[in-house]
Length: 207
Image 1 (cartoon, rainbow, N blue to C red):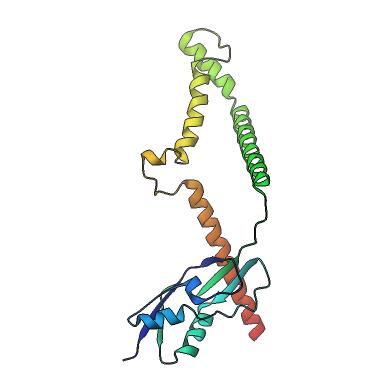
Image 2: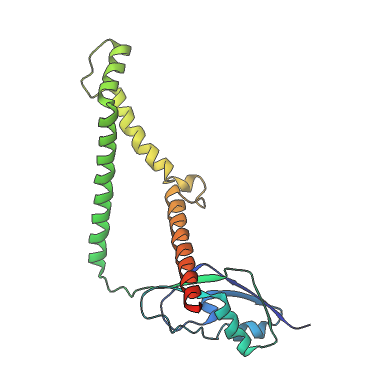
């Protein structure tokens, strides 16, 4: 019985150079370790890569490279049938510029969130509601700066911090935040769409 190579490739792999060897993109296991070490050095044809961006490849491309070197080797794919190589753009941005960009994004997020909260409060008439509640329970007219407003303001801030796991070190730091979950879902949707679009274009080219 011939040797069997188990191959696993993730859906999206980031690379920094057009020169890609199989060891950069795939996890491999085989009873004969010398075979694995050799295969990890084999180059993947990357003629379609022209610069920074995302490029779709098939696992068949990888298997073809392997079987040219080891024709009798059985390859068992345990990962994706199609995958994306993301070529990162070289960053030449100075630290000062990076800090300025970070500060601008933080300010934009802060004032955007503040405006959204104020717009929501205005839509539901939270000031009027708190005034009525204060008058019902105390019999006095609210001046707009009472325990209700203070508690509400603190509660909004704490709620955001707790919701996004900013106290994760005191809980379970391995749990992803809701924002990380949404970002992961968004990335998966983009990858799936790119792979499906590439599959359609290949079928049209072959027909």
